[in-house]
Structures are given as C-alpha cells and as structure tokens.
Image (cartoon, rainbow, N blue to C red; front, side):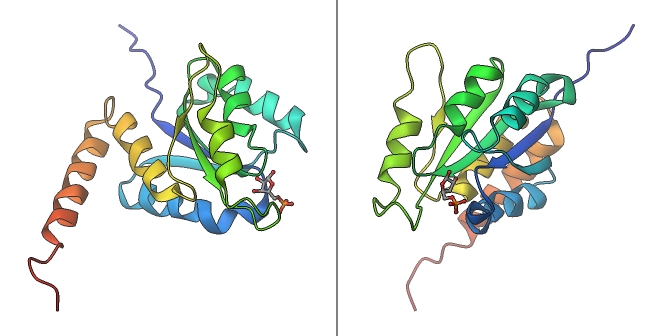
Length: 165
Ligand code: RP5
C-alpha cells in the first residue's frame, strides 16, 4: 500500500531583504528543533507573480506551514492564506523603520483578516515564537519534531533560576 506523503516543511517568507534580521530568529529555532524549512523573499506588492506561483504550489512541494514576515501594509500573510487555502499561515508583523508606526500597522493588517480566511499572528518582531508555533504544528505529524520541542521547552523551564543574582 502506498502511504500518503506527509507535508512536514515550513516556508519562511518575507516581504523584503530588510526583514531578514528579524526573520533569522525563526530560522534559528527551526534549526535547533530540526524542522525542515526553506527561506524566500516574496513580496505581496513587489513580486505578486512570485507570491502566486509559490503559494499555489505550496502543498505539492511538501509544505504545510508558512511563516510570513512583513512590515508596513502587511498583505503577505493574508494573500498567502488566500492563495494556499490549506496552509497554516502565521504572520509576523515587522516594525518597519520607514513607516513610523512601530509595527502596529502591520499587526492590524495581520489580525484583521475577514471571516473565512484565518491567519495566526505573533507579537511584533516575534519571529522566534512564530518558529516555535510552526514547530508545534509540524510536531502533530512528525514525532521527532514533537520530541525536540518537548526537550527544548523542558530546558527553557530548567534554565529559569529561582532567585535573581
Ligand atoms: C514591507 O515594507 C517589507 O516587508 C518591509 O518590512 C518594509 C520595508 O521594505 P523595504 O523598503 O526595506 O524593502 O513591504
């Protein structure tokens, strides 16, 4: 009997090269947890064709979670969720130096999705937590990732000292 292929890859996508210093945090935790991922620059506004092509082939390429980081008028997560209807999309609102609004505008763009097209949202610049959340989703189908996440959380708990120095 042929088993169905399990989609266990995360796509880290960002609107601009300038988002990478923040989105590196997502790569960092996914590497620690041994989650398979690919990182790309895909802009909803500047490279819409690239967005369409990547989002519509997402499932067939073995991905199931998309972590989308963008600042300003953050349309990346919402457009990705529209074009890849079965993807788990996590939006990372990024504090863009150019907008002067401290990332709140990107945050509102991510959380105010219309009914029927959900996108999860982490904190402004919260790429590390987006990676942890992505790993917990992949852990549902990948026991190794689940176990790595469990160990990591356990170590985090152990690292919290009882008293300040
Ligand atoms: C957004 O505008 C990008 O995601 C980035 O956060 C912000 C600024 O982009 P650049 O002008 O630095 O390319 O679309």
